[in-house]
Image (cartoon, rainbow, N blue to C red; front, top):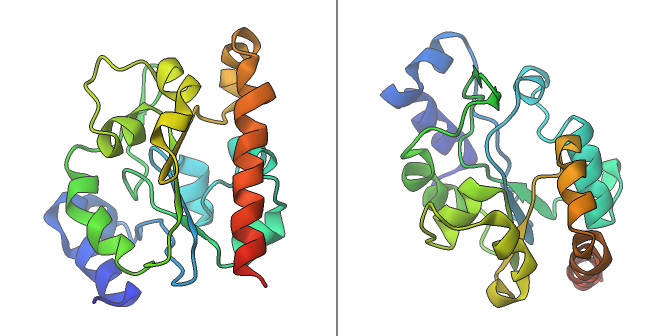
Length: 197
């Protein structure tokens, strides 16, 4: 098994990431050996990449509310891995951040997750993570996947992105906050209780 240091060095040495490495930008992910919950999102935003702190924005604040944990516990408990579909900010397009680069997760996720062998629950945030891990076609609808989240348990828990931009989606889909989030919080609390005894 690789160490986090050797894995990081290998990622930075990959020609796909040459532009970032030349600028001194390291990949942004975390895989504590003690992690029980893995959060798979799209890619770091520019604020996260610059601050070197993942989920360091209003989306992260919402995510922690959904999980039922505070900021200190989220960052310091060692129970959360964050393994996005791309470990680098992919840039900005016409309507927000560009998608994660193709082939990145295929190349690095398995090696990364070998460092966190106790993962019990994988949160799949957004279309890219859901299509990759659930082997979905590009025509799969995020709303349908999230509404039918129980079909993917106990290993996977699909979620919409916690960005404030999705407040309109939440207003149109009240079942999400009424049914899905309480179940998510129960499952997270059970894992935390079991892991901290």
